[in-house]
Length: 191
Image 1 (cartoon, rainbow, N blue to C red):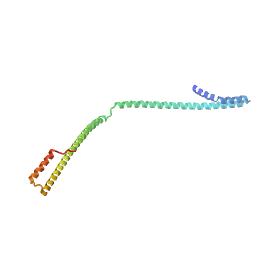
Image 2: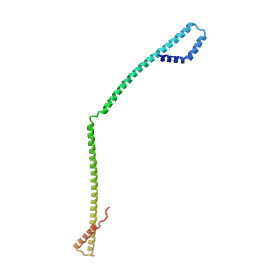
Image 3: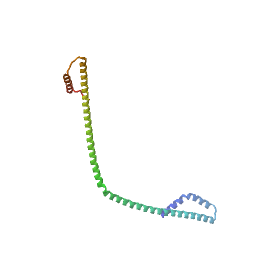
């Protein structure tokens, strides 16, 4: 109530400069009492309308304040309920958690088994590659020996055909075998 009067007084004081001028004009001229009364009544009516408007605004503000307080209380109660529910949910272990942990353990076991098999497969592939390389080197060596023997036989045949040398088959076989044995004793370096 005091705040309303204070607010109204502050508004009237803002208008004091204008009203003072009007008051001075009214006093300085000779006016009839009826005119003065009329002006005063109009001012009173205007002040009364202003007062009613302000009271109406205050009532609306109070209504809004009550509605907001109710909403705040509802939200606060809802927040408390949700916090209690959250705390209870934190303490409760979900029904699927046992199954989840079991499946997670199985997954770890399967992954370990997968890694072991992958390593074994990689090792076996590496061994196979080394064996294939050695086998290929052996085949290449045999082919080189075979070509040398063929070359030697051709040379011997050419010598025999020209009549330069006369050999029998036993000597030729012995000579080829000696060459093959010397190749085995002194193998070429491998790449």
